[in-house]
Image 1 (cartoon, rainbow, N blue to C red):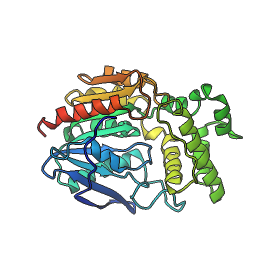
Image 2: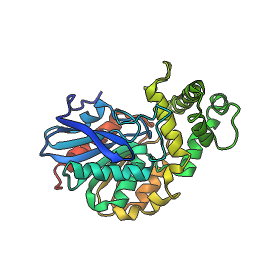
Image 3: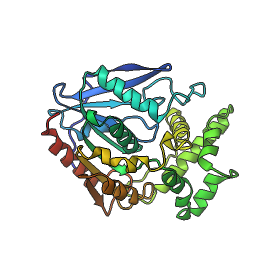
Image 4: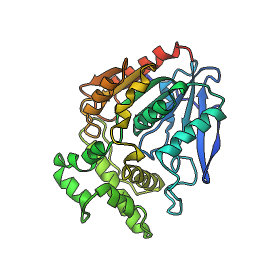
Length: 314
């Protein structure tokens, strides 16, 4: 097991008003005078966890973590059916990042994220390249319709029995159907939909080392996650299909490290490969033995990239 930096506590945190009644929870840890870096969690709707802080040298980085709208410690929480998700879109999250950057007095920052966090990192950097010093992303996803179709239909070829349970009596667009179920007024319907959704997510990653299964009760985390991810994916992230890779040339002046596992059944490696081809100067690292989850190899590559970038100006 690779050694990460020691557990760290935030030296500052708060709730930022971002509009539409939303308060986004943020925290900063490490060195207040260090190189700024912002962490974009996955999901969408997973929220940040303390372990994310441990990838950064606390003497050299000023690390910013925030829970995206509706999840984690941000309010109102998407687990509450009364929470309106109309103002929870990729465009809103990009705006939230800029508001947070300005609130913290940061001119430019390193951007890092994984899975959905990759999508958000690319969308942000392509919109605001002048605000980004470097990018480190892993488990590469651009939330394109083809990627979503693969994850919730195509991957069923590997798990036909589990996918049949996931599909149930639903027809047509399964992601849109689950999004509707997560808005049902009956709490039992929402709970069972979240249970089925999380079970399928676990199934797709079940062949990886260290895979876990949601065996416990369905709580606020699962309800918020299932509701937010189906909301975003039923709209393909409100992104033009293929745009993030098409516009990767806008990142030519931003050093980038792309980290991916060849055995990632959730996000097949061709997306990472196509992104690297379209992003001049980016570095693609593929671990033949890793999947979607983190691994010692992938963590080592990220630590090395962060160590290298810590010495660059900002």
